Amino acid sequence: MELKEYLKIIKKHRNLFFGITLAIVAVALGYFYFLPVRYDASLTLNITRAGSQETADYKYDDYYRLQADQAFADTLVEWLKSPRVVSDIYTAAGLNSFSMSLSQLSKGLSAERRSSQIVTVSFSAPTASQAQKISSGITAIIDKNTEELNKDQKEATWFKVVSDPPVIVKYAPNYKLIFLAALILGIFLAFWGVMVKHYLE
Image 1 (cartoon, helix red, strand yellow):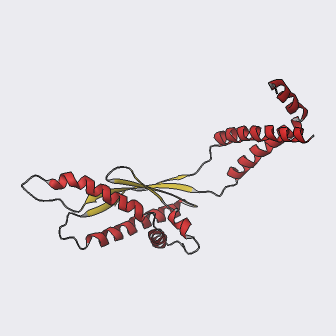
Image 2: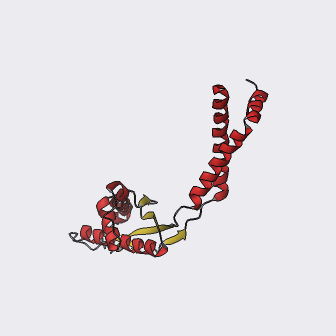
């Protein structure tokens, strides 16, 4: 079938074509417009040491430290994926996590190791104050877990985690991008809708 024949079919069923396209665009825009307000937050955790190795010889700790820091950073990431740790964080923040499933708890925080000594944590909250409380909860629980890990160490050169103030911003949908994506999807679905109607006729 040539292009002009497709255009002829679309012209014949133009009401259906434009109706489907506009409906898809309206649903997409309406969905994002009526989404509950949310705040996205990002917290940076810096891995450091409580002390330094004192020696007159070659400081092997300077070489192995980065490897150890990287391994500990991976441990932090795994902690923040644990439902138990996330539940403790919500409790420390004064929030109720009992209604959340294990899947929701494990996906409530997104942690990523950026380098051997930096881990970033991203999450969302319905209010800016709640996002601040969750950030404080993360810091408190990570400090607690790190202290538990350090307490049996004989040297004061073990890990310490320092957190920067969180960055909290109100989520704002990109309506131009949403409109464009919805328009493309709407045209695609409208085309096949018209083709199906034409075939049935």
